[in-house]
Length: 353
Ligand SMILES: *Cc1c(COP(=O)(O)O)cnc(C)c1O
Image 1: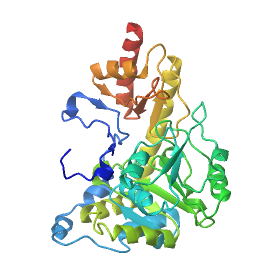
Image 2 (image 1 turned 90 degrees about the horizontal axis):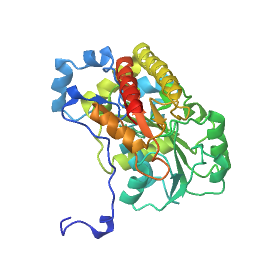
Image 3 (image 1 turned 120 degrees about the vertical axis):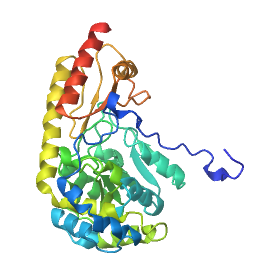
Image 4 (image 1 turned 90 degrees about the vertical axis):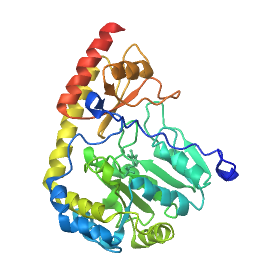
């Protein structure tokens, strides 16, 4: 640390992203929940010589084709759509500007929430999940903090039905609930449908997991026009041009290509359910996932051991150290071929231990 670093932030513990190995050819990468498929063909078509020439100019502000495509997809107004440089940026604005009474979230959820709280010096309360990793809505009754909820949750994959989200919103209509739907497209139902009824709801989504654009850095927020106005006030007080011109075009193209989106997510769901069944047959314990990953506890060894043995065989998954997560690894659902390789490696490992 240099002597110039602000003492207020000296205890900051930054988020630890999953490894991005340099030599991708040798590794099967199942550790950061990216898509195994390329972006939509329409994204390639959007990247024309003319669109690249436009990089000379600042990107468009206000309502863009991306806003309109997204609004059409969900049947909401374009003014209810906020765009950010990845959903992490949208979440950062929520922590910075939409937590007047602090924040509250589960003990086992997206690891970035406590980091944002630290960065913006927002006090936060941790609400432990039950023994089986399910979330009890009643635990949130009476809390005044802004609630952050990943649905489906990470790293467990467990999903809350819209009636559960509704119950949470009903507890206090003057308390904001931020539903992080990074994984909603793999079998869940989006809470965007609840927006007409609840102005204390903000939904966050990303193009990183179900729309093949993790490298494009594009995230969305949906809420009342007032809430979206607040997010824009924050954005325009920080970096109005955070979403670059090409990413705006890529996002609109991906959003308009419903056929490709549906084909990709259906394939992930199919491979996820097959992989879950196969691993359970081998004695793994796996909570029911509606995400593009599974949280899997191998039989007869720790999560760390399984992680290390997979790594020796060129397969990268994510292990989270911690009392509740020690027995598990999080495995991203890749292509069918990648998951076959995972199963073959797992059979070898199970013979060995
Ligand atoms: C991946 C992920 C994000 C971040 O996505 P980006 O749009 O790539 O910043 C947010 N929330 C959860 C729960 C995630 O898993």
